[in-house]
Image 1: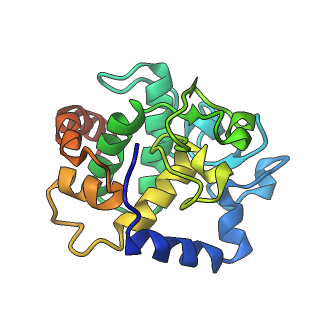
Image 2: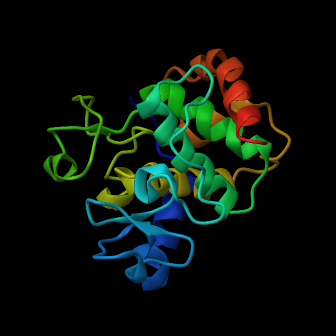
Length: 210
């Protein structure tokens, strides 16, 4: 996916660089959940995060639920949706945020975590599929040039956190039409395609209790 970087994105990079180590480490390496922030689990691959992707069938409170499937999604998609929705909840956000996250991830990756040989480091992280589309990786097809934390890019929860950080800087994001909000964050060449994902996103977010 090609997109034009926005001032919001450059602001996010500056904000991330200034983050305390404890926040950045939410998606960093771990040997046990004791190394992760409260509410986060250490996955079998040694990275902190939320949801079934990291916590199995026993996520922490607000972590996004277990391994049950969401309507219209298979087990892998449901796992990633659970981690993303868990992050939305962890940040105390609304249905609007859930719809934006799920509809965007459906359009960008059909809710799969993509590694990309063009970004060799991405191949070292857990992933669902491999695809070479420029240097885009992960569930939101985030580009390391603008999202340099590869561990976060390759994490359903971590990439959702990055998406939400940009989203929350969009003026009036709470009341925007959702597909327009998706495009405001992603700056995609084909930004008109997000709307087609909203019916399924509505089902998923409703099933998640939003």
